[in-house]
Image (tube, rainbow, N blue to C red; front, top):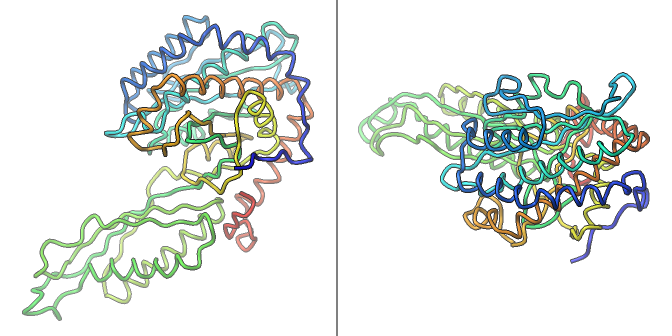
Length: 430
């Protein structure tokens, strides 16, 4: 399988951050054993969303022991925190950058860390500690933050942080995610949940079916309508459906059904269009069967991940330099609340290989997430993030380019022009 080629427009080296590489390597190596121990402690004691009390206590204690100031209960989220380090001459008004590295540490029900969030914590801590060490021995001016983001697995911790203004004074953000393979440009879809109920009228299915109004017919009609809608959806637009309540007994005309829908799309604008199309399918089913429809979109909605090629070019450079292999591949999809951060400020969310080819959210991946090779590769991803952060700090032109790309991409990504190819969900750029 061929490796990803670096676009000709991207620089082949990043000399501004290169002088710090030995410091970054030495710092991460110094902390390697303790970072592994912390990661394994979280892996061995998985906690669900907004219940990550052990993880947060373990991480914040580690940071404080290393001499860092930590704010707990950050933005009034009990299992969030913020550690920050800034140089003595830092001045936001002088355009000195503030950059956040994000950590995740929640687990999945019954499957533990089958998404490897313990590895995200290890990589993020490695990056944060290394950047702090490099800044201490430099004349650069910057602020680096380590932000604990709870409840990625359905709770929307980052959505709440964005809404609370956590990123208002931050210029750039980044994190990494474990994966079967290394991926720079991870294609992540936005996601929202839709609860659908149809209300009809019960009747005896044999003696008087004409007296009933069949809510199951409405659910089935809606499903069929969606099936026809799916045929004309562009790549990256997805609809998933499950029936939660289809009736009580076969000989009773169901007067109530409940379904849950998941809707995904590659841009915010495409998501809004798809939501309207789905609602049209549901209303048509209600009209055809005579049922009453109640449909409610659930919160929080995860936004699609908006890529920043400028920042990713640095990550790719140092990833390849340190042994990562980025194959040419089709989009990976899935969803994360990091999408909400990426549409607020320039951000990246690349994936790093754990050493074995198992898909995330499986028991096999849960096992791999606690193995030495996965821990080692998490630290390598942390090193790559650290060098990306330092290049942003040291290179004002890179920051300007990344910000300009963010503004230009966001116009089409979120934009009001719902008839544009981007708004329709054109996923060809991925």
